[in-house]
Image 1 (cartoon, rainbow, N blue to C red):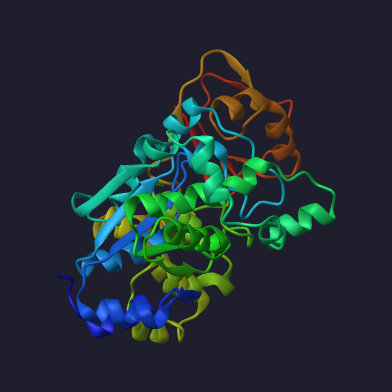
Image 2: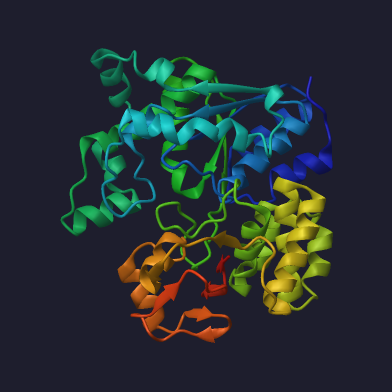
Length: 390
């Protein structure tokens, strides 16, 4: 039997929730104390799980705290196929080797939020690889083409004359079949997953199961204001270091601070109301501390906050700056590339011309400059990249 905690149940159905289908039925189940099977799947299309994904993971943890059965599905098969629910163009098929590489630390990352010992971890290749055309055809018959065409991202691409592959149309069937295989009572997912989640309900009916209830969460903006996405690189990742996580959070746009508090932390809602009274910088510092604390602990959060203040408030050199030795002479462009301050010599040149490179606190404007072995210097690129020659 699951715990019956009316306050907790109310928050599960409201905090960070965009829509619940069917709310009344799910609330009744939760208040009955029946142990439910709660499902969430993530495709390993990137090695990093970002904190936008933490929104449904935290909701999964809320259900876990009440004693419900948690099924976390790693989409090692659906990850190959690719979901384009939130994409403006066709997502390429990934190589099996790449997917396996991406998912190496997924359990470790999820364990930062969930009690992994009380979770069922499933890989959907176990059942999806076995499907034949007869079974796929039976499931595909549940849906009509018009149902796919009215999906926003599909209709936009069709109007623009962009290709929509049959593979993409089959993806919701595969995700829906996952719900059949684990006999899900509830599935969690972002608003961009709504069609896929509903597909699970229809396929469960086909196989004689009761349709799952659905809890969708809003999507969160990344550091550049667009939707947080690994493909755009605007993410805060679960495995980021404490200093990196703190610094990224401090670069967040002010208008997203309270949304982050609500969706990706479990700071009590009444406390968030008090935080709203603070200035944006203090709000952000508190948010950064909460995020780091969630994934690295209280001590790491305190240290990251102190380091940020030291580097960006007091303009001191960071204690964990990368150190490097050189022999002979080296061009500034090669140094920036080898030191990891620029991805290439051409980027290094661009950064110098933009005035983003400082040597010992002085802006470096000569991209032809040569650095000698004996020189001890501190090189900074932008606000976050540091290198010390020793």
